[in-house]
Image (tube, rainbow, N blue to C red; front, side):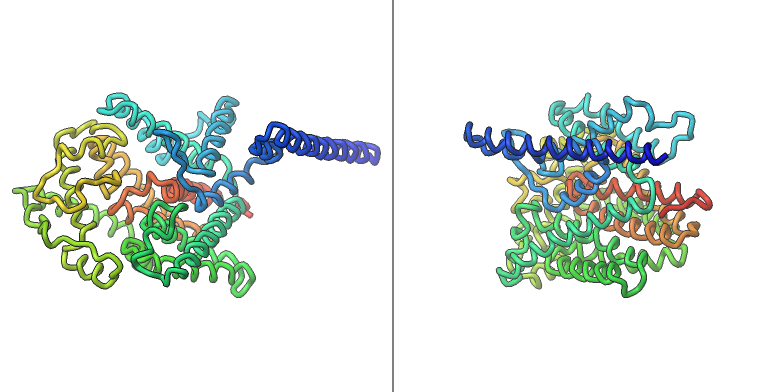
Length: 486
Protein backbone atom coordinates (compact mmCIF):
# COMPACT_ATOMS: atom_id res chain seq x y z
CA UNK A 1 0.00 0.00 0.00
CA UNK A 2 2.77 2.43 1.04
CA UNK A 3 4.76 1.47 -2.06
CA UNK A 4 1.79 2.30 -4.31
CA UNK A 5 1.41 5.72 -2.67
CA UNK A 6 5.14 6.47 -3.08
CA UNK A 7 4.96 5.35 -6.71
CA UNK A 8 1.99 7.65 -7.37
CA UNK A 9 3.80 10.56 -5.72
CA UNK A 10 6.85 9.94 -7.88
CA UNK A 11 4.66 9.99 -11.00
CA UNK A 12 3.13 13.32 -9.94
CA UNK A 13 6.60 14.71 -9.24
CA UNK A 14 7.83 13.57 -12.66
CA UNK A 15 4.79 15.12 -14.35
CA UNK A 16 5.29 18.41 -12.51
CA UNK A 17 8.97 18.48 -13.44
CA UNK A 18 8.11 17.72 -17.05
CA UNK A 19 5.59 20.61 -17.16
CA UNK A 20 8.12 23.02 -15.63
CA UNK A 21 10.79 21.88 -18.12
CA UNK A 22 8.37 22.40 -21.02
CA UNK A 23 7.55 25.92 -19.80
CA UNK A 24 11.24 26.77 -19.29
CA UNK A 25 12.15 25.57 -22.77
CA UNK A 26 9.20 27.46 -24.28
CA UNK A 27 10.15 30.70 -22.51
CA UNK A 28 13.82 30.44 -23.53
CA UNK A 29 12.93 29.45 -27.07
CA UNK A 30 10.40 32.27 -27.52
CA UNK A 31 12.83 34.88 -26.10
CA UNK A 32 15.60 33.67 -28.42
CA UNK A 33 13.31 33.58 -31.47
CA UNK A 34 11.80 37.00 -30.67
CA UNK A 35 15.23 38.65 -30.39
CA UNK A 36 16.77 36.77 -33.30
CA UNK A 37 13.94 37.37 -35.77
CA UNK A 38 12.82 40.67 -34.16
CA UNK A 39 9.26 39.33 -33.93
CA UNK A 40 8.15 40.33 -30.45
CA UNK A 41 4.77 38.64 -30.88
CA UNK A 42 6.61 35.33 -30.37
CA UNK A 43 6.84 36.23 -26.67
CA UNK A 44 3.20 35.14 -26.27
CA UNK A 45 4.18 31.50 -26.93
CA UNK A 46 4.53 30.64 -23.19
CA UNK A 47 0.97 31.86 -22.64
CA UNK A 48 -0.16 29.51 -25.42
CA UNK A 49 1.49 26.61 -23.59
CA UNK A 50 -0.18 27.63 -20.33
CA UNK A 51 -3.52 27.78 -22.14
CA UNK A 52 -2.97 24.30 -23.58
CA UNK A 53 -2.04 22.91 -20.14
CA UNK A 54 -5.11 24.50 -18.55
CA UNK A 55 -7.33 23.05 -21.28
CA UNK A 56 -5.84 19.61 -20.68
CA UNK A 57 -6.32 19.91 -16.90
CA UNK A 58 -9.68 21.68 -16.47
CA UNK A 59 -11.15 23.99 -19.10
CA UNK A 60 -13.96 25.10 -16.74
CA UNK A 61 -11.53 27.73 -15.37
CA UNK A 62 -11.21 29.15 -18.90
CA UNK A 63 -15.00 29.38 -19.05
CA UNK A 64 -14.90 31.62 -15.98
CA UNK A 65 -12.16 33.61 -17.71
CA UNK A 66 -14.43 34.08 -20.75
CA UNK A 67 -17.08 35.79 -18.63
CA UNK A 68 -14.47 37.83 -16.77
CA UNK A 69 -13.14 39.07 -20.13
CA UNK A 70 -16.50 40.08 -21.60
CA UNK A 71 -16.54 43.59 -20.03
CA UNK A 72 -13.00 44.28 -21.29
CA UNK A 73 -13.52 43.10 -24.85
CA UNK A 74 -13.39 45.62 -27.67
CA UNK A 75 -14.05 45.30 -31.37
CA UNK A 76 -11.16 44.92 -33.78
CA UNK A 77 -11.80 45.66 -37.46
CA UNK A 78 -9.99 43.36 -39.90
CA UNK A 79 -10.90 44.51 -43.40
CA UNK A 80 -14.63 43.89 -43.81
CA UNK A 81 -14.63 41.55 -40.81
CA UNK A 82 -14.75 42.46 -37.12
CA UNK A 83 -14.02 40.47 -33.97
CA UNK A 84 -14.42 41.18 -30.27
CA UNK A 85 -11.16 40.58 -28.43
CA UNK A 86 -10.42 38.72 -26.25
CA UNK A 87 -13.81 37.09 -25.69
CA UNK A 88 -14.75 36.03 -29.24
CA UNK A 89 -11.65 33.82 -29.74
CA UNK A 90 -12.57 32.14 -26.44
CA UNK A 91 -16.12 31.60 -27.74
CA UNK A 92 -14.67 29.97 -30.86
CA UNK A 93 -12.39 27.86 -28.66
CA UNK A 94 -15.37 26.62 -26.64
CA UNK A 95 -17.28 25.99 -29.87
CA UNK A 96 -14.44 23.68 -30.92
CA UNK A 97 -14.48 21.97 -27.52
CA UNK A 98 -18.24 21.56 -27.79
CA UNK A 99 -17.94 19.95 -31.23
CA UNK A 100 -15.30 17.53 -29.88
CA UNK A 101 -17.60 16.66 -26.98
CA UNK A 102 -20.45 16.01 -29.40
CA UNK A 103 -18.21 13.77 -31.52
CA UNK A 104 -17.36 11.79 -28.40
CA UNK A 105 -21.09 11.16 -28.03
CA UNK A 106 -21.15 11.57 -24.25
CA UNK A 107 -22.91 14.91 -23.93
CA UNK A 108 -26.37 14.10 -25.31
CA UNK A 109 -28.56 11.46 -23.71
CA UNK A 110 -30.83 10.56 -26.59
CA UNK A 111 -33.23 8.49 -24.52
CA UNK A 112 -34.06 11.32 -22.14
CA UNK A 113 -37.00 13.64 -22.96
CA UNK A 114 -36.09 16.86 -24.76
CA UNK A 115 -36.72 19.90 -22.58
CA UNK A 116 -38.91 22.61 -24.18
CA UNK A 117 -36.05 25.11 -23.72
CA UNK A 118 -33.68 23.09 -25.90
CA UNK A 119 -36.45 22.27 -28.37
CA UNK A 120 -37.18 25.99 -28.87
CA UNK A 121 -33.46 26.78 -29.29
CA UNK A 122 -33.07 23.98 -31.86
CA UNK A 123 -36.12 25.19 -33.79
CA UNK A 124 -34.74 28.74 -33.74
CA UNK A 125 -31.43 27.54 -35.18
CA UNK A 126 -33.16 25.49 -37.88
CA UNK A 127 -35.35 28.42 -38.89
CA UNK A 128 -32.44 30.90 -38.86
CA UNK A 129 -30.47 28.55 -41.07
CA UNK A 130 -33.37 28.27 -43.51
CA UNK A 131 -33.95 32.04 -43.68
CA UNK A 132 -30.19 32.60 -44.10
CA UNK A 133 -30.15 30.29 -47.13
CA UNK A 134 -33.01 32.17 -48.85
CA UNK A 135 -31.86 35.60 -47.58
CA UNK A 136 -31.87 38.68 -49.79
CA UNK A 137 -28.20 39.07 -48.77
CA UNK A 138 -26.92 35.51 -48.45
CA UNK A 139 -23.31 36.17 -47.41
CA UNK A 140 -24.32 38.72 -44.80
CA UNK A 141 -26.84 36.30 -43.30
CA UNK A 142 -24.36 33.41 -43.48
CA UNK A 143 -21.79 35.44 -41.53
CA UNK A 144 -24.45 36.28 -38.94
CA UNK A 145 -25.45 32.63 -38.69
CA UNK A 146 -21.85 31.53 -38.16
CA UNK A 147 -21.41 34.01 -35.30
CA UNK A 148 -24.76 32.96 -33.82
CA UNK A 149 -23.69 29.31 -33.81
CA UNK A 150 -20.58 29.95 -31.72
CA UNK A 151 -22.62 32.16 -29.39
CA UNK A 152 -25.07 29.31 -28.85
CA UNK A 153 -22.32 26.70 -28.54
CA UNK A 154 -20.42 28.81 -26.00
CA UNK A 155 -23.31 30.18 -23.95
CA UNK A 156 -25.96 27.47 -24.23
CA UNK A 157 -24.37 24.11 -24.99
CA UNK A 158 -21.14 24.61 -23.03
CA UNK A 159 -22.91 26.43 -20.20
CA UNK A 160 -25.28 23.49 -19.84
CA UNK A 161 -22.33 21.06 -19.94
CA UNK A 162 -20.02 22.90 -17.52
CA UNK A 163 -22.52 24.17 -14.95
CA UNK A 164 -23.25 21.02 -12.99
CA UNK A 165 -23.63 22.32 -9.44
CA UNK A 166 -24.25 25.49 -7.46
CA UNK A 167 -20.54 26.06 -6.88
CA UNK A 168 -20.01 26.40 -10.63
CA UNK A 169 -22.73 29.07 -10.79
CA UNK A 170 -21.17 30.87 -7.85
CA UNK A 171 -17.71 30.95 -9.46
CA UNK A 172 -19.14 32.06 -12.79
CA UNK A 173 -21.15 34.92 -11.29
CA UNK A 174 -18.17 36.12 -9.25
CA UNK A 175 -16.12 36.22 -12.47
CA UNK A 176 -18.88 38.33 -14.08
CA UNK A 177 -19.23 40.67 -11.11
CA UNK A 178 -15.50 41.21 -10.55
CA UNK A 179 -14.96 41.96 -14.25
CA UNK A 180 -18.03 44.21 -14.33
CA UNK A 181 -16.90 46.10 -11.21
CA UNK A 182 -13.41 46.75 -12.58
CA UNK A 183 -14.73 48.12 -15.86
CA UNK A 184 -17.24 50.30 -13.98
CA UNK A 185 -14.44 51.77 -11.86
CA UNK A 186 -12.45 52.45 -15.04
CA UNK A 187 -15.35 54.26 -16.72
CA UNK A 188 -16.25 56.23 -13.59
CA UNK A 189 -12.63 57.35 -13.16
CA UNK A 190 -12.45 58.62 -16.75
CA UNK A 191 -15.90 60.19 -16.44
CA UNK A 192 -14.82 61.96 -13.23
CA UNK A 193 -11.98 63.59 -15.18
CA UNK A 194 -14.69 65.10 -17.40
CA UNK A 195 -16.75 66.28 -14.43
CA UNK A 196 -19.37 63.55 -14.96
CA UNK A 197 -20.63 65.48 -17.95
CA UNK A 198 -23.80 64.27 -19.67
CA UNK A 199 -22.32 65.28 -23.01
CA UNK A 200 -19.25 63.09 -22.45
CA UNK A 201 -21.17 60.08 -21.06
CA UNK A 202 -21.68 58.52 -24.49
CA UNK A 203 -18.07 58.45 -25.66
CA UNK A 204 -16.34 57.95 -22.31
CA UNK A 205 -17.15 54.22 -22.34
CA UNK A 206 -15.08 53.53 -25.45
CA UNK A 207 -13.23 51.38 -26.48
CA UNK A 208 -14.76 48.72 -24.22
CA UNK A 209 -18.38 49.58 -25.07
CA UNK A 210 -19.63 50.87 -28.42
CA UNK A 211 -21.82 53.43 -26.60
CA UNK A 212 -23.33 54.29 -23.23
CA UNK A 213 -26.57 52.44 -24.04
CA UNK A 214 -24.73 49.11 -24.06
CA UNK A 215 -22.79 50.16 -20.94
CA UNK A 216 -25.98 51.03 -19.04
CA UNK A 217 -27.70 47.81 -20.13
CA UNK A 218 -24.67 45.76 -19.06
CA UNK A 219 -24.61 47.28 -15.57
CA UNK A 220 -28.39 46.87 -15.24
CA UNK A 221 -28.30 43.15 -16.07
CA UNK A 222 -25.46 42.59 -13.57
CA UNK A 223 -27.12 44.43 -10.68
CA UNK A 224 -29.66 41.69 -9.74
CA UNK A 225 -26.84 39.15 -9.44
CA UNK A 226 -24.94 41.27 -6.94
CA UNK A 227 -27.92 42.51 -4.92
CA UNK A 228 -29.89 39.28 -4.63
CA UNK A 229 -27.06 36.76 -4.44
CA UNK A 230 -25.64 38.47 -1.37
CA UNK A 231 -28.26 36.35 0.43
CA UNK A 232 -26.13 33.28 -0.33
CA UNK A 233 -23.77 34.46 2.40
CA UNK A 234 -24.09 35.24 6.09
CA UNK A 235 -25.09 38.86 6.75
CA UNK A 236 -22.07 41.11 7.35
CA UNK A 237 -19.65 38.41 6.21
CA UNK A 238 -16.76 39.46 3.94
CA UNK A 239 -18.42 38.28 0.71
CA UNK A 240 -21.74 39.83 1.79
CA UNK A 241 -20.07 43.24 2.19
CA UNK A 242 -18.25 42.83 -1.15
CA UNK A 243 -21.58 42.23 -2.91
CA UNK A 244 -23.14 45.23 -1.14
CA UNK A 245 -20.21 47.31 -2.41
CA UNK A 246 -20.54 45.96 -5.95
CA UNK A 247 -24.29 46.65 -5.89
CA UNK A 248 -23.69 50.27 -4.85
CA UNK A 249 -20.98 50.68 -7.49
CA UNK A 250 -23.25 49.33 -10.23
CA UNK A 251 -26.08 51.67 -9.18
CA UNK A 252 -23.71 54.66 -9.28
CA UNK A 253 -22.53 53.56 -12.72
CA UNK A 254 -26.13 53.22 -13.94
CA UNK A 255 -27.08 56.65 -12.57
CA UNK A 256 -24.07 58.35 -14.19
CA UNK A 257 -24.52 56.54 -17.50
CA UNK A 258 -27.44 58.95 -18.07
CA UNK A 259 -29.24 56.25 -20.07
CA UNK A 260 -33.01 56.33 -19.70
CA UNK A 261 -33.35 52.64 -20.58
CA UNK A 262 -31.05 51.53 -17.77
CA UNK A 263 -32.84 53.81 -15.29
CA UNK A 264 -36.27 52.44 -16.19
CA UNK A 265 -35.00 48.83 -16.22
CA UNK A 266 -33.73 49.20 -12.64
CA UNK A 267 -36.97 50.94 -11.60
CA UNK A 268 -38.94 47.95 -12.91
CA UNK A 269 -37.17 45.46 -10.62
CA UNK A 270 -39.08 46.30 -7.40
CA UNK A 271 -42.33 45.95 -9.35
CA UNK A 272 -41.21 42.53 -10.64
CA UNK A 273 -40.31 41.52 -7.09
CA UNK A 274 -43.77 42.51 -5.79
CA UNK A 275 -45.51 40.65 -8.63
CA UNK A 276 -43.44 37.53 -7.90
CA UNK A 277 -44.28 37.70 -4.20
CA UNK A 278 -47.99 38.13 -5.01
CA UNK A 279 -47.75 35.21 -7.47
CA UNK A 280 -49.12 37.53 -10.15
CA UNK A 281 -46.09 37.67 -12.45
CA UNK A 282 -47.31 35.11 -15.00
CA UNK A 283 -50.79 36.64 -15.15
CA UNK A 284 -49.33 40.14 -15.67
CA UNK A 285 -46.91 38.81 -18.33
CA UNK A 286 -49.72 37.26 -20.38
CA UNK A 287 -51.94 40.33 -19.86
CA UNK A 288 -49.14 42.63 -21.02
CA UNK A 289 -48.70 40.53 -24.15
CA UNK A 290 -52.42 40.83 -24.94
CA UNK A 291 -52.39 44.56 -24.15
CA UNK A 292 -49.45 45.20 -26.50
CA UNK A 293 -51.20 43.17 -29.19
CA UNK A 294 -54.34 45.33 -28.86
CA UNK A 295 -52.29 48.54 -29.05
CA UNK A 296 -50.56 47.33 -32.22
CA UNK A 297 -53.94 46.40 -33.72
CA UNK A 298 -55.29 49.86 -32.85
CA UNK A 299 -52.28 51.62 -34.40
CA UNK A 300 -52.26 49.59 -37.61
CA UNK A 301 -56.02 49.59 -38.27
CA UNK A 302 -56.85 52.67 -40.31
CA UNK A 303 -53.20 53.81 -40.17
CA UNK A 304 -53.79 55.42 -36.77
CA UNK A 305 -50.02 55.48 -36.21
CA UNK A 306 -49.78 58.52 -38.54
CA UNK A 307 -51.19 60.66 -35.72
CA UNK A 308 -47.90 60.07 -33.88
CA UNK A 309 -45.59 61.16 -36.69
CA UNK A 310 -42.93 63.60 -35.41
CA UNK A 311 -42.67 67.25 -36.40
CA UNK A 312 -39.47 67.32 -38.44
CA UNK A 313 -38.54 70.88 -37.38
CA UNK A 314 -39.21 70.38 -33.66
CA UNK A 315 -37.56 66.97 -33.20
CA UNK A 316 -34.28 67.75 -31.43
CA UNK A 317 -31.45 66.30 -29.34
CA UNK A 318 -30.33 68.20 -26.22
CA UNK A 319 -26.59 67.61 -26.32
CA UNK A 320 -25.03 68.18 -22.90
CA UNK A 321 -28.40 68.98 -21.28
CA UNK A 322 -29.89 66.03 -19.38
CA UNK A 323 -32.94 68.00 -18.15
CA UNK A 324 -33.75 69.19 -21.68
CA UNK A 325 -33.17 65.66 -22.94
CA UNK A 326 -35.70 64.21 -20.47
CA UNK A 327 -38.19 67.04 -21.10
CA UNK A 328 -38.05 66.45 -24.87
CA UNK A 329 -38.58 62.74 -24.26
CA UNK A 330 -41.77 63.37 -22.27
CA UNK A 331 -43.05 65.82 -24.91
CA UNK A 332 -42.41 63.38 -27.78
CA UNK A 333 -39.82 65.69 -29.37
CA UNK A 334 -36.60 63.86 -28.50
CA UNK A 335 -34.64 62.91 -31.60
CA UNK A 336 -33.61 59.30 -30.83
CA UNK A 337 -37.13 58.38 -29.69
CA UNK A 338 -38.71 59.82 -32.82
CA UNK A 339 -36.12 58.11 -35.04
CA UNK A 340 -37.23 54.84 -33.47
CA UNK A 341 -40.72 55.46 -34.84
CA UNK A 342 -39.21 55.88 -38.32
CA UNK A 343 -37.46 52.49 -38.04
CA UNK A 344 -40.47 50.78 -36.46
CA UNK A 345 -42.81 51.90 -39.22
CA UNK A 346 -40.28 50.63 -41.78
CA UNK A 347 -40.11 47.31 -39.91
CA UNK A 348 -43.91 47.11 -39.89
CA UNK A 349 -43.95 47.55 -43.66
CA UNK A 350 -41.15 44.98 -44.09
CA UNK A 351 -43.12 42.42 -42.08
CA UNK A 352 -46.22 43.06 -44.18
CA UNK A 353 -44.31 42.50 -47.43
CA UNK A 354 -42.25 39.49 -46.23
CA UNK A 355 -44.67 37.95 -43.77
CA UNK A 356 -43.55 34.32 -43.49
CA UNK A 357 -39.80 34.20 -44.04
CA UNK A 358 -38.61 37.82 -43.73
CA UNK A 359 -35.65 39.25 -45.64
CA UNK A 360 -32.98 37.17 -43.87
CA UNK A 361 -30.93 37.54 -40.67
CA UNK A 362 -28.83 40.73 -40.42
CA UNK A 363 -30.44 42.34 -43.48
CA UNK A 364 -32.54 45.09 -41.88
CA UNK A 365 -30.00 47.85 -42.64
CA UNK A 366 -29.80 46.83 -46.27
CA UNK A 367 -33.58 46.64 -46.75
CA UNK A 368 -35.51 48.98 -44.46
CA UNK A 369 -35.19 52.23 -46.42
CA UNK A 370 -37.21 50.64 -49.22
CA UNK A 371 -40.08 50.34 -46.76
CA UNK A 372 -39.57 53.59 -44.78
CA UNK A 373 -42.24 56.31 -44.61
CA UNK A 374 -41.00 59.90 -45.02
CA UNK A 375 -43.77 61.12 -42.70
CA UNK A 376 -41.66 59.78 -39.82
CA UNK A 377 -38.30 60.98 -41.09
CA UNK A 378 -35.92 62.82 -38.70
CA UNK A 379 -32.58 64.62 -38.97
CA UNK A 380 -30.65 61.36 -38.43
CA UNK A 381 -32.64 59.09 -40.75
CA UNK A 382 -29.70 58.90 -43.15
CA UNK A 383 -28.26 56.54 -40.52
CA UNK A 384 -24.50 56.95 -41.11
CA UNK A 385 -23.73 54.76 -38.04
CA UNK A 386 -25.70 51.85 -39.59
CA UNK A 387 -27.83 51.20 -36.51
CA UNK A 388 -30.84 48.93 -36.96
CA UNK A 389 -34.44 48.61 -35.79
CA UNK A 390 -34.11 49.72 -32.16
CA UNK A 391 -36.47 46.90 -31.24
CA UNK A 392 -35.12 43.34 -31.23
CA UNK A 393 -38.55 41.74 -31.49
CA UNK A 394 -39.56 43.82 -34.51
CA UNK A 395 -36.19 43.15 -36.11
CA UNK A 396 -36.62 39.39 -35.66
CA UNK A 397 -40.08 39.46 -37.23
CA UNK A 398 -38.82 41.64 -40.12
CA UNK A 399 -35.72 39.55 -40.82
CA UNK A 400 -37.00 36.02 -40.04
CA UNK A 401 -40.70 36.37 -40.70
CA UNK A 402 -43.63 35.63 -38.47
CA UNK A 403 -42.38 32.10 -37.74
CA UNK A 404 -38.92 33.20 -36.58
CA UNK A 405 -40.38 36.09 -34.59
CA UNK A 406 -42.97 33.84 -32.93
CA UNK A 407 -40.31 31.28 -32.01
CA UNK A 408 -38.11 33.91 -30.35
CA UNK A 409 -41.02 35.60 -28.58
CA UNK A 410 -42.31 32.19 -27.46
CA UNK A 411 -38.88 31.31 -26.04
CA UNK A 412 -38.77 34.57 -24.04
CA UNK A 413 -42.30 34.24 -22.64
CA UNK A 414 -41.80 30.56 -21.81
CA UNK A 415 -38.54 31.16 -19.92
CA UNK A 416 -39.91 34.19 -18.05
CA UNK A 417 -42.91 32.26 -16.80
CA UNK A 418 -40.74 29.19 -16.14
CA UNK A 419 -38.49 31.26 -13.88
CA UNK A 420 -41.52 32.52 -11.95
CA UNK A 421 -42.87 28.96 -11.61
CA UNK A 422 -39.52 27.64 -10.40
CA UNK A 423 -39.28 30.45 -7.83
CA UNK A 424 -42.72 29.63 -6.43
CA UNK A 425 -42.16 25.87 -6.22
CA UNK A 426 -38.46 25.68 -5.28
CA UNK A 427 -37.71 24.66 -1.68
CA UNK A 428 -33.95 25.23 -1.68
CA UNK A 429 -33.43 28.86 -0.48
CA UNK A 430 -30.28 29.39 -2.54
CA UNK A 431 -31.86 28.07 -5.73
CA UNK A 432 -34.92 30.22 -5.02
CA UNK A 433 -32.67 33.26 -4.71
CA UNK A 434 -30.81 32.34 -7.91
CA UNK A 435 -34.04 31.98 -9.90
CA UNK A 436 -35.14 35.46 -8.77
CA UNK A 437 -31.77 37.03 -9.67
CA UNK A 438 -31.76 35.43 -13.11
CA UNK A 439 -35.38 36.42 -13.77
CA UNK A 440 -34.65 40.05 -12.89
CA UNK A 441 -31.49 40.08 -15.00
CA UNK A 442 -33.48 38.67 -17.92
CA UNK A 443 -36.17 41.34 -17.41
CA UNK A 444 -33.57 44.13 -17.82
CA UNK A 445 -32.32 42.56 -21.06
CA UNK A 446 -35.80 42.10 -22.53
CA UNK A 447 -36.80 45.63 -21.57
CA UNK A 448 -33.76 46.98 -23.42
CA UNK A 449 -34.70 44.75 -26.36
CA UNK A 450 -37.91 46.75 -26.79
CA UNK A 451 -35.82 49.87 -27.43
CA UNK A 452 -32.65 48.37 -28.93
CA UNK A 453 -31.23 45.15 -30.41
CA UNK A 454 -28.60 44.47 -27.75
CA UNK A 455 -29.00 40.69 -27.76
CA UNK A 456 -26.66 40.71 -30.75
CA UNK A 457 -24.04 42.63 -28.71
CA UNK A 458 -21.63 40.37 -26.83
CA UNK A 459 -21.86 42.38 -23.57
CA UNK A 460 -25.58 41.65 -23.35
CA UNK A 461 -26.33 38.67 -25.62
CA UNK A 462 -23.98 36.35 -23.73
CA UNK A 463 -25.92 36.99 -20.51
CA UNK A 464 -29.27 36.59 -22.25
CA UNK A 465 -28.40 33.02 -23.19
CA UNK A 466 -26.68 32.34 -19.85
CA UNK A 467 -29.81 33.45 -18.00
CA UNK A 468 -31.94 31.03 -20.01
CA UNK A 469 -29.57 28.16 -19.22
CA UNK A 470 -29.55 29.05 -15.52
CA UNK A 471 -33.36 29.03 -15.43
CA UNK A 472 -33.26 25.57 -17.00
CA UNK A 473 -30.60 24.41 -14.52
CA UNK A 474 -32.52 25.64 -11.47
CA UNK A 475 -35.62 23.86 -12.77
CA UNK A 476 -33.61 20.64 -13.08
CA UNK A 477 -31.92 20.93 -9.69
CA UNK A 478 -35.03 21.92 -7.77
CA UNK A 479 -36.81 18.87 -9.18
CA UNK A 480 -34.15 16.47 -7.76
CA UNK A 481 -35.05 15.88 -4.13
CA UNK A 482 -32.21 15.53 -1.74
CA UNK A 483 -29.49 16.20 -4.31
CA UNK A 484 -26.52 18.13 -2.93
CA UNK A 485 -25.69 21.27 -4.88
CA UNK A 486 -22.80 22.49 -2.82
